[in-house]
Structure formats: C-alpha cells, structure tokens
Amino acid sequence: MTARSTAATATRLAFLPESSLPPAVAWDGDGIRFLDQRALPFEIRVERARNADEIVAAIASLAVRGAPCIGVFGAYGIALLRRTVSDDNAFLAAAARVRAARPTAVNLAWAVDRVLASKDMLAEAEAIHREQEAVDAAIARHGAALMCDRARVITHCHTGGIATAGQGTALGIIIAAHRDGKQPTVFVNETRPLLQGARLTEFELRSAGVEAVLQVDSAAAVAMAREEIDLVLVGADRIARNGDTANKIGTYALAVLASHHGIPFYVAAPLSTFDARIETGADIPIEQRAPSEVTAFRTAPSAHPEARVFNPAFDVTPHHLVTAFVTERGILRPPYREAIDEVLRVSR
Ligand code: MRU
Image (tube, rainbow, N blue to C red; front, side, top):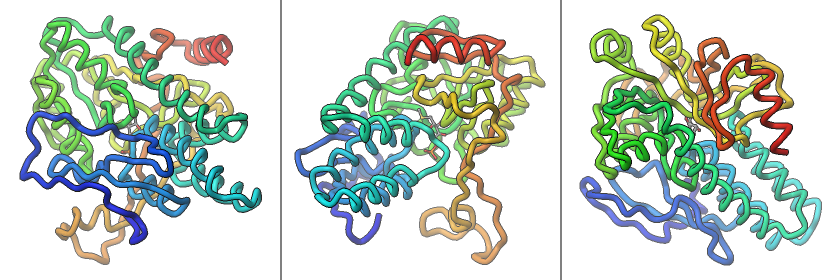
C-alpha cells in the first residue's frame, strides 16, 4: 500500500485457523473497508481507502484482487469520490484513474461505467455488490452439474469468496459440491509469481473443509497423467465474444495440458466478465507487472535483482480449448460466438 493508506485493523497470527474472514469489501460511510489479500494466510489485515490514491493503490497492489471483487470495490470507489470530490472535472479524472487501475479484468471498467451512468451512485454500487452475491450462488448451482462424486479437480489462481466479494466462482462451485457431500479433491496450482493459489485457494479450501493438495504449477502435467484428474476448473478476467479467455498467467498452459490429456477444461465467470466489444482474445489488454514480483517474493530475493523479466499477469486461452463456460445463466457450450451473443442479448 502507499504511505497514505491507513491500517484500520491488523490481527497477526502465525497461521490463520478456521476462517471467519471479514468481508472482502464493505462501504462504511465515508470510506471503503477492504481485506488486504496480500497478507493472507498469515495475517488478517483490514484497511480503508478514502480517496482516489488509496483506491487505485489497493487495486494496483493486489491488496484487492479478483475480477469481480475489483469491480465491486471500484464501484464503491466511484460512489465515494462523487461524495468527496465536488469539482466535476476532478471527479471524472479520478474516476478514470480508478477505471484504469488494472486493465485486463473487464469487471472493473464495467462496474465503474455502470456507476457513472447511474443517478444514485452509492445505490448502484450496492446493487452491483448484491448482484454479485446472487450471481455467485447461481454459478455454484449451475456448476454442480460438472462435479461428479469424488471429483478430482485442478484449479489455478484464486476464485473464492474474497476474489468476488461474494461466494466465489470456480471455487464456489467446488465448495458447494463439497457441501452437497460430493467429496471433491482439489489440486491447487500455487500460481506463480504471487502465489494466489498457495496463499488464498489452499487456505479457503482448508477453511471450508475441502481436501486440497498444493502443487507447483509445473506439476500439473504429471498430475493429469497420474492422478486421475476429472476436470480443470478456473475463473476468468475477460472473455471475448468468440470465447477466448484471459485469466491468470499459467491458465493457457493448463488448458493445453488438459486438451493433451483429454480432460475437460471449464471456465466459471459472471456475465460481467464477458466483453461483447472485443471480438477475439488478441484484443484483450494484458497487464504487465513489475520485474520485482519475479526476482523476489515479498522481501526474499529469488533471482538477481537486475535479471531481465517477462511478467505478464494474464494469458489468453483460445476458445477451442474451453469445454464450457459456467455463468449465472447456465452452461455455455460451443459454438461460443452464438452462445455468448445470445446470453448477453437476453441479459442486457
Ligand atoms: O491478478 P489476480 O490475482 O487479480 O488474478 C485473478 C484471476 O486471474 C482470477 O482467476 C479471476 O480474476 C477470477 S476471480 C473470481
């Protein structure tokens, strides 16, 4: 976080026990409270954003992360700025900065635009938040059809409750299947370089009582070859009109591996992650992040500090590698151009 950010609460624990995490995002009257996801699973740290600098810093630093979650947070951010920035030009400039804080996940721009176009910005932000909770529940219901008894699943990055400010997308499906008694086992890619899988997914599955096996990303191939994997289930940050899907770096490799091993590859995402203005994945802007995320983990160096680094935060999985999408409106199967156009036409 920037120096301007204020730690409202910090509870330090060696490792967190069963979770009763505070909400990922909450409006508190004259600020937005958020759970700093960078601190998990070692510490519950709740912070507050009160101005554009703090909102942008929270999103850009991945303190608040996950496509739907940054949408909800950005929506409250715009409502907050409208209350605190009286000059219209200054307000619009600040809103544009929030909208651009992360370029790949379309949920952020979608939510900011929706709030900006509304009459009561706080009511609209609250509606986006409540809708996300309902959407997650619907995704979990529809996704149940993909989960056989004792399913062995590989997932990547983190798609749980704190990534959506709801109950999660791909992880929400898995946890719902566990609650239905299906006893899934989840192979969790640690998700280099920032370890969202190791820090957040393993922790959330552990907290829910789901069997989780942590693996380095490069173990996915041998897991598919030897561990009787039934399916791969991941989230998304932006889905083009033809079904090409941007998600956390490493997702494309996983999809190629799944195709090679004849394993179905599913993407769970709300319709707010589909971008009808973008025809193919070639047009999805891919965020490049700092070399320091690869040359060190937190403060521990892992390479020469001046190493040249290639650090795209996302990759694009071509649509032909996606077996199906799980949305709040049901499961979409190829041909995706028609299925996506139809579901967006009915929903918007
Ligand atoms: O860079 P991150 O951690 O925000 O990337 C997140 C992902 O790639 C998630 O899979 C995606 O946002 C879906 S969250 C439900």
